[in-house]
Image (cartoon, rainbow, N blue to C red; front, side, top):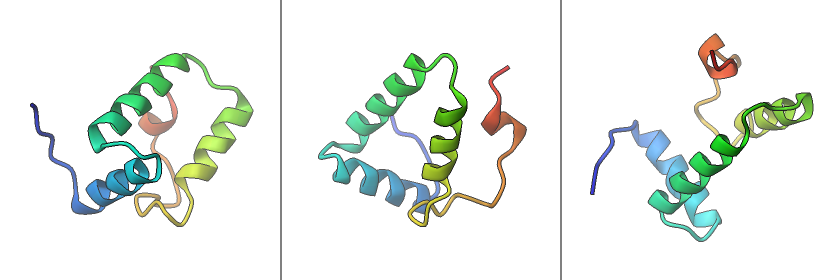
Length: 74
């Protein structure tokens, strides 16, 4: 088993998202990774949906803006 370090609020969010889906945090992260890997490119609607999901009240990481690295994959 490998451990990763994340801020407490990130860990809490991961636990909440995982629990909402009936998954462990590890299984939830694997699910997210598979979803991201399947999306080589995003449509405009996908980008809007992603921003809406990330900017919701349940996501304390949203800072009102996204960095270039968070938006583009070079």
